[in-house]
Amino acid sequence: MANYKSIAVIYGSDSSEWEVSCRSGEFIASRIDEFKYDVYEIFARFGKWKLVAMRKANSMRMPFPEGAQPEVDKTDFSVMVLGEKVQLDFAYIMQHGAPGETGLLQGYLEMLGIPHSTCSAFVTSVAFDKYSCKRYIQDADYVKFAPDCVIRRGEDVHNFCKMVTERLRFPVFVKPTDNGSSFGISKVTKPEDLPSAIGFAFSEGRTVMVEQGIPCQHELTCAVYADGQEVKALPVIEIISQTGWFDYDAKYNGLSSEVCPAEIPEELSVHIQEISKRIYQHLGCKGLVRIDYISAPDGIYFLEVNIIPGMTNASLVPKMVRAAGMDMTYFLSKIIDNA
Image (cartoon, rainbow, N blue to C red; front, side):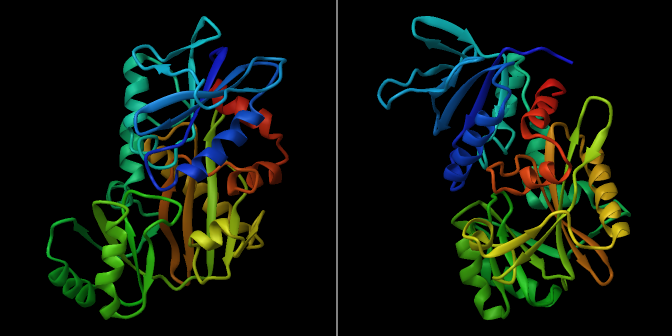
């Protein structure tokens, strides 16, 4: 177990998720142990990394006004604060989307030898791309995978749509492979709507996956973390969406209910937790991840791995932490101390 002093919480991103990332990062910064760590909030977007607020241990949070926000020195991951150079010795990454979920930020920190809260650069890059992640774990016999087709920008959309209609049953879900928060995702019920949905997905990424819809009994999610001794799973949540699926409005505009712990048979809940721990270990994850599923009549279907799940007060993982009877500050200390 390492002892860190200066914790940098990095939020903002180069993707459409940057505002969600800011809310998550601010929440995390506010819950990190105020008696144990100095916390430095870094807003990072399109290559500009600025210190927007800091909180020394046992002190109040001090925001920096725009125009007077110190820039992070990327050569050694330090920042000048009030004439004093602060060496940031741990990064809590809360960037949804690029570069925090693509592995680029992790690669930078790993080259400098700076410990961080998430999976390695390699695991992050594999897990963030929905298509790559499915292929990486597709031989697992403990979870099912929906049939899919994939197209990259520049390929023939007409021929691709023809292949989709031959191989998959409708409805299908069209999604960019490398984005989150449901940006760019569409549910398509008839073939003639495929081209526009693919174009919409391409507005958010360079690769698009069309995935066959699965008859859904329950939409479930489970977070997993390592506490230094073992891999543990938090309580399972069931997501009940008013929009028919867990889209942006359901996630962020109150059009869903999130039941935690999920009101499902205990054996199903335990099964989801065990599957989640196995996927976590299969991928070689560390830190905290959240894994999403659909429970169907013929079994449990994997949806995706969230390497950096949302962490606002209303987000899924904080609800799981509370349902597990843990204090959020205690939980974050576990993640930091065992990174």
